[in-house]
Length: 362
Image (cartoon, rainbow, N blue to C red; front, top):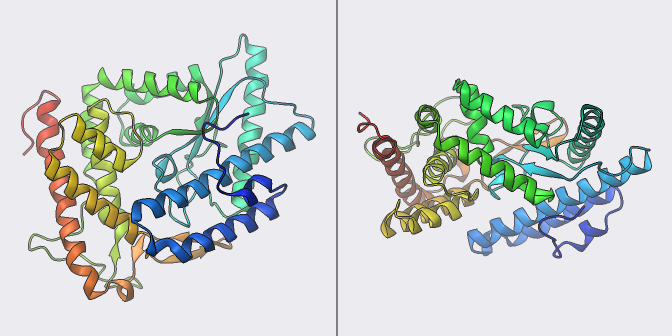
């Protein structure tokens, strides 16, 4: 199958014939990017890194299809799309991101065909996930992954699943709906993914109760800056004196702009593109857009200073900036950026209920 976006920048990846070669190509590519990462503009460096991840995942899927065919499973029986969620869906992965994925395939004509399709695509998803683990991508701890039958469905199955999440607005279902908003097709039939997204956004407009629950979920993670502008660093343990960049800076802004974009009917998944689109739709003024863009770019950069830990023989990012890397030169711009993030959270908290038809939030 064809990828929605052909990559020409990584010939070692395109030519890799097995997982060992692909793992070597990843390590080589990341070393190359690490050497230039902090000399490039942040947006350019992040884009290059995510092109690398996309190329690796696309090659894994090609190898998985080929290996299934050689093993007697044949070619994909119907068109499908492999989806990325989380930072992959947003094109915001770090060097050590995990797998967040799903798979949607075309509806069958009858039950017998559906059983064939279901069996094939679960096997394909399991194979792809296993291969990605082998080259250094750990699976999502929350089981948002294509090898989980919940996230590997035909189009009508996805439609019913999403309708069920909308019908029962539990915290977990709202979390799944927010995750689904970041879905991006990386391989296969992008038209299927577009149909899924169109149905998703159509359902969203008819569920104001869900939107209010999404607001609660969105504001769950607070920006780590105090009332006097001080950094709210870790107080205890091995990370004492450090700052949780992932959940105290980056994720709060991701969440805020995702919800604003969803309410505005903007289907972009990348946060910077969401900011630009919100400016164009009048949800942000030019000053807000400029400040938030600058703040978010700083958070994207600082995520690459965060520490890592070894889990299952693989390096995994902690999302936490160690005290040793929190330099004096970094503190002032970080405080400024965190204040911008806090202001955006306040904007969402105050303005979104009004746009939803309710009163101003207290």
